[in-house]
Length: 173
Image (cartoon, one colour):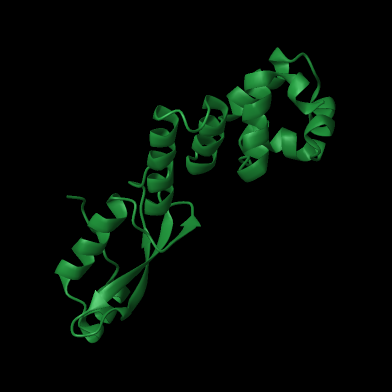
């Protein structure tokens, strides 16, 4: 079981709201199994917790910060969709390309890139920061900040960097 750390403010609220530790532990176990209400990004999740005599619907909504959640399919629905798709592929009802597209939609396989990896990628492509910025449709200052570690690429920018890393500049044309 994971360790649970609570702030003083949360503990005061927990006593007032009559939230028992067992319900909190149960919610953390659900989160470890991928059952969450909302992923707010950067390891922060919203989770509904049942209060005694009220159930989950009338329960409490809490924000949980964690670094234990894997960066993969965190939704039970997405996990089930992926499992079903794999079964359809095994039965010959969908092809490998369709299965690959579903896997890409259901999993977040984009790992963060270090500043040296970003600079190494650009140098491997033999292009300047300004050309790299133009190809990625981003300001030169952003490329500089990525390479110095002042800023980290995320979302579509990070995904695009991984596409370029895998397929080269031909992926952008």
